[in-house]
Length: 314
Image (cartoon, rainbow, N blue to C red):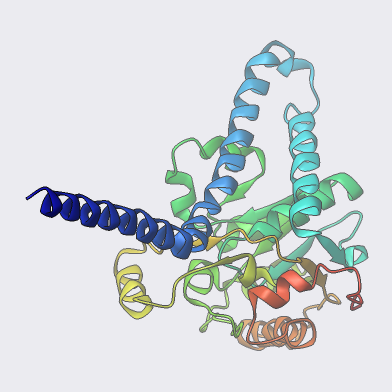
């Protein structure tokens, strides 16, 4: 009887040890996956930190509002410096062709939309710091329903945008940026970087009516910084098309190399229609993708692009 009790205790100890070892193995196996889904929360924290800063800034300087030329200018520059520093450290962020952004006068920047347009945040910061100009942006309507973000949208002049409101912004002499692919391209694109603009021509109507140059823009590895899972994509897209709710899991915030390329401006002509001009702009963006992006995109290669032996493309 004594021997039997000893044997049972021994077996239970071994089973207990096996459970602990198995649990450790499961944690080790799933750790990278868990982290990849948690990393985007860092960006979310950074965005809410920006909102908090603006709220504090507004309270601190409320009495000086009447005397300031631009109440939010100091806040924008401070946040621009923070975002620019974060981009340099985390992504080694660079811009090729910044001189294509005019020092004065209007321009329309058309870009390929990554899962999260973090490259747009960085280029906005870069233009504020190096050119003293503010890029205004067209954003999806759902952004304005995220708690706490409305102030951020107002300060950085992000609006849902109509053709007429966009024309007015450009005729006032500002820089405006639009992604024709929008949320659909962001969430349902893939590592092959296919442009998903369908037959959208609104941005072309804006360019023609305002008679402004259009600057194509693409950021290398933008889909490797953040990604969406491939499973369930068709079902999630059907749900999005019905509801317009972007309920798609996002993972990543990988410290991959990001480099934004700005192409030569395209100028509307009297012969252009919205359809023909939209096609010209789309080909220009696709040319930037073909020249500067290896497809299919790879997170590993995008990480290796940060190595010092990599030669910059121009």
